[in-house]
Image 1 (cartoon, rainbow, N blue to C red):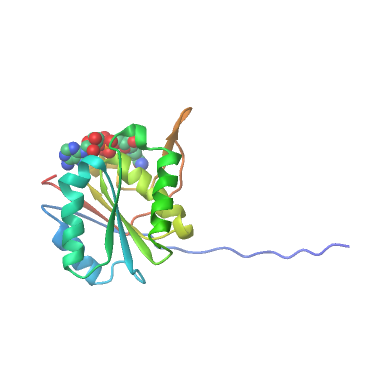
Image 2 (cartoon, rainbow, N blue to C red; image 1 turned 60 degrees about the vertical axis):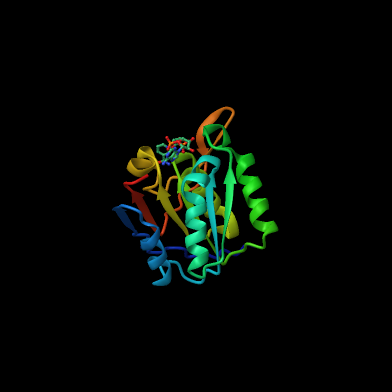
Amino acid sequence: MSANFRVALKKVVDHSYDIEIGETLFKLLIEDLKRGIVENVSKFAIVTDSKVEALYGQALLEQLSQNGFHAELFSFPAGEKSKTRETKAQLEDQLLSRSYGRDCCIIAIGGGAVTDLAGFLAGTFGRGVPSLNYATTLLGAADVSIGGKTGVNTPVATNLIGVFHQPKKVYIDLVT
Ligand SMILES: NC(=O)c1ccc[n+]([C@@H]2O[C@H](COP(=O)([O-])OP(=O)(O)OC[C@H]3O[C@@H](n4cnc5c(N)ncnc54)[C@H](O)[C@@H]3O)[C@@H](O)[C@H]2O)c1
């Protein structure tokens, strides 16, 4: 005796998103948030690296806070060597210890290492939370921040552990 039940899982999804190219786009990002580009979000985690934190991360945090958004900075040491499962786990623990849950949005601001790592984090935290990419390097702008490929390196493989997770919007700031 056996019984068979089929789980029907066909779905049509629209993951389309805009790419904004311009100068000094924090104001626009904040206008987008006020317009509801991400829904049901009560906390914003700005994920960045130690260099970009000082260059742009702090300024973004200040502007978000001044506009009434609950936002905090989560930073890791700059460089490819940080793009690991260990750094991702540390960021996850920091988010959890600050009571971040499914109602958060991750704003990745930095180069490719940041958007790869933060995108992977967004793809798995709470089984997937919305994310925005703010590219600050040429490679980040031209490639990494677009397309939804995210991931980390291990000692034996680069970019092989990750998920596809599309951002809600990409900002390419020509000033950075
Ligand atoms: N997901 C994809 O589709 C994809 C595609 C290509 C490359 N990648 C990944 O991208 C990563 C490389 O990206 P990257 O070259 O941007 O490296 P990166 O993010 O490590 O940035 C390089 C250095 O520049 C600094 N930096 C960032 N913005 C700056 C700014 N505005 N001014 C001064 N310094 C700044 C960073 O702190 C870092 O020290 C690699 O990990 C690679 O695997 C991913």
